[in-house]
Length: 112
Length: 119
Image 1 (cartoon, rainbow over the protein chains, first blue to last red):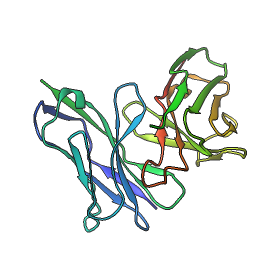
Image 2: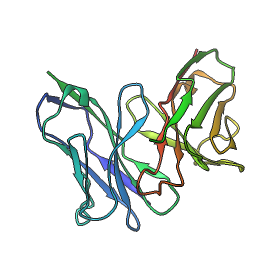
Image 3: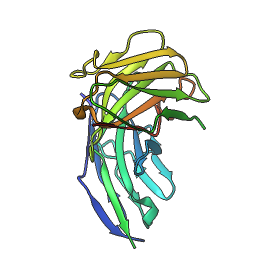
Image 4: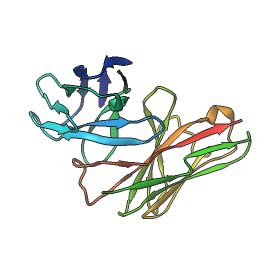
């Protein structure tokens, strides 16, 4: 079956530090990959996506590259801000069922 | 862009009462909606898939008589937690699929969640 593994948090960084949140997956077929962000007390927002191997998704300074050979989709940002503090979920989708498979989420805390 | 509205955002009620949570797609018709439960500092657990005009499909281990789902129109799905008890306290999130968007673009649009506290 499908599964997503994320690095455990929390991740605590100082403002302007470099961020990497690791995500690897197991899936049948050729999944689409997503990163969602959840701010405190809110639902999930799509941050970025990639639909095929070697695609790079990017948004708001965040980026992730779909690596088929390593089955990974690591999230990176060159310089984090306090406002980036949130929980980040890696997810995948296969087929037409629209069922997303989520990782466990990684909490990011950015301090001044 | 596509918006999903979830109501209420926060509810506190006594043990034994039933609570209804609404999920509306505001600018698209959602034939499929999803209900998730999220425990503190944990991931989302899919509870059920709600299909307009038919019975919901529940995930293994989710009590269908406890969590009643109704998807009576293309823009509204409701989750009713029946005879709620403190262990049902959680953050419930709905999402809706816009069939016009295509799976790979934005598979689901999420509501802002409902925090349910049972005393």
